Length: 343
Image 1 (spheres, rainbow, N blue to C red):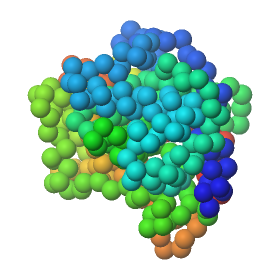
Image 2: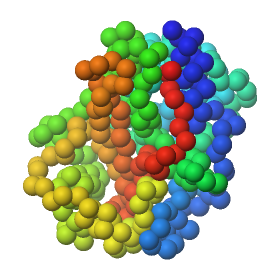
Image 3: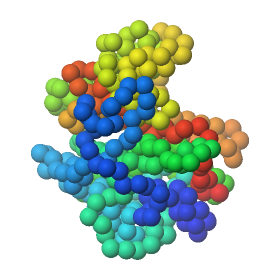
C-alpha cells in the first residue's frame, strides 16, 4: 500500500513541493500599501514572495524562533532536498498527519518523501515563502503557489499553507491546504491513513481569541467578528467597519477593493449573526499584523459510502489601522487542471 502511495502521492500531491516544479521566481517585493500587488483595485492581486525569507525565521521569543527554524529546516532539507534521514530528529515518531491524501506517522512520512530526488540542501525553501509566523507551539508557513490558467495559457498565483504543531523540539502534527479527495489507496484514519481535522465550535472558539499581546488579541477579534458577520451572515452593509477601502485580495476568484468585497458578499443570503463561526476553528495564529484563521471542512467520501473525509482551510489577513487590509487563501480557479491523489 505504501508503495502505491509513494508513487502516486509523490508524483501528484508533492508536485508543488519538489524542486523543479512549475513555480516561477517572482520579482520579490514587500506586500503592502505601496506594493505592485496593490496597484489597481478591481483586479486580483498576485501573491508576492517575501523579499528576505531568512528574516522570517527570526523571532524575539527564543522558543518560537526555534519552532520556526525547525519547520523551515525540515521543509528545505526533507521536502525540497530528499534528506529523509533527518526526519528521525525533526519529527515525532507518532507524527499526526491531517492531509486528506497522506498517511500518518513518521515512517509513512519518510516513505512518501523518499521519492524526492536527493540533492544539496538549499538555503531557503521552495516554493518561495510569503510568510512564516509562530505562536506558542504552532507555526504557519505560507508559500507562493503558481498554477496553470484553466483552459488557456499562462499561470496564476495562489497560496499554499502548512500548519505545524511542535512538541519537545520535534514536529508532532501537520495540517495543510490541499483540498483533494482521497483515492482508493488512501487508508481510513484507524488504519494509518489521514487523521480527521477537528476544531472548536460554539463558545469554545472564544478561548482561541486570547493573546498575551493586546494588539494581537484585538486583531484576532477583528478577524473573528468580521468573518462571522460578513462571511457567515452575508451582512455586507457592515463591511465599512472591518474592511479597508484599498483592501488587497489574493484569492484568484475575487478582485481587490472594498467595493468588490461588498459586491461578492452581497451574493450571499442575509442570515442571523451568530456568536461563533459556522465552521470549527482548528487554530488562530497571530504575529505582528498578520492573523491566520484555520478551519475544518467536512466532505462526503468519494469511495466509502456514508463516510466523510476532512480538509483544512486557511485564511490569512493583514491588519492595518484596525481594519482588514489584505487577504490570502488557498483558493484555485474553477477548472484548474488538477492531479489525482492516492489513486
